Length: 264
Image 1 (cartoon, rainbow, N blue to C red):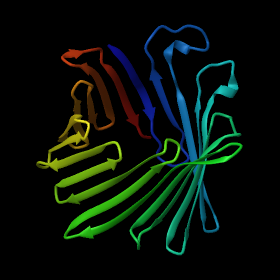
Image 2 (tube, helix red, strand yellow):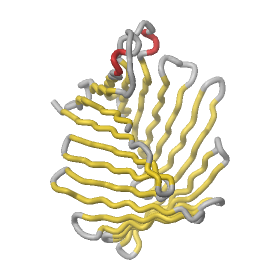
Image 3 (spheres, rainbow, N blue to C red):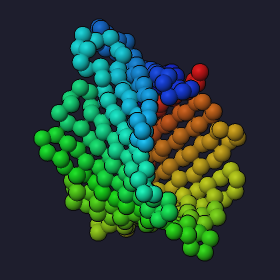
């Protein structure tokens, strides 16, 4: 059994407090570069206002012992947000490591009066390449909430549409493309139990069950026949995830991760 334990995660009480995460990895480790299997990461973010524009920025970096200091930064990002004529506009840029020659961009626009939101994802290096575009339109109908989201993946030349219907304890989600259609029916059985079967046009089935165990505690199981069984157990600040691969009637080794958040 693989056992990957996220031993410690120190959360943030304010936007300017760093967050530290330490993981213990499988295997045998030796030497300065491997550091006994520890994989500590620190992230920090802050924000300020410049007139009508809100600016936020942050960095995520490894703090493991290494001779290559340039390898420590994992990502650096910045975001700007403002309102123009009823539209909330935001643009976020992120670079991986210290490679400032390439950046990923997310541009969002939303209008509450029109119940409409737009999103564009792009990358910029020597040229600007638009990767994904999507729009979400929502409306209310006879006490139900309906949203329609057409999506375009320009990188892979894929397109689909996602339709969500929610009313009372029932949610229906339909994802349709030229190659596949997938339907999920989520039903809140009572205050503590929710089930959500999913079926697609290729004949694949899955079943998700969520059980509330008390305040801030729950157990969620997702079964995909001939694929996997995924379990997530949340108990206040603790979160445990278990993935069990399934091949017919054979069950192979499980992957387990455990994390605890400590806020101070």
